[in-house]
Amino acid sequence: MQYARDAFAKLLKAHGIAGSMSCKGDCWDNAVVESFFGSLKSERVHWRSYQTREEARADIVEYITMFYNCRRLHSYLGYQSPDAFERNGQLANAA
Image (cartoon, rainbow, N blue to C red; front, side):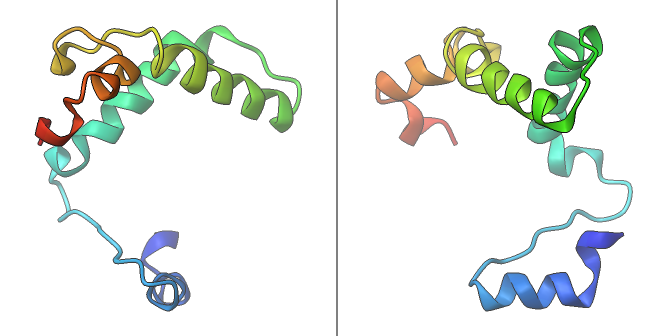
């Protein structure tokens, strides 16, 4: 695993970043990001055919900034978008 290599760990430490890796087989440890990538793939990427990495990058950034954060309703956030949830001052109470 690339992210577990010594050089990467040293780079994180040099920048004051604590690395976080789940235990082997602990699917719940990274559930939030796994859910996000599932949504990204099923709602956007699987329906597109990108010709270049730049085209893919631009489309994914657009999905995140213009749809996922602004308009997509999230059940965990009381069926609000992340932007609306943050605007309503609920971010501090989410955890």
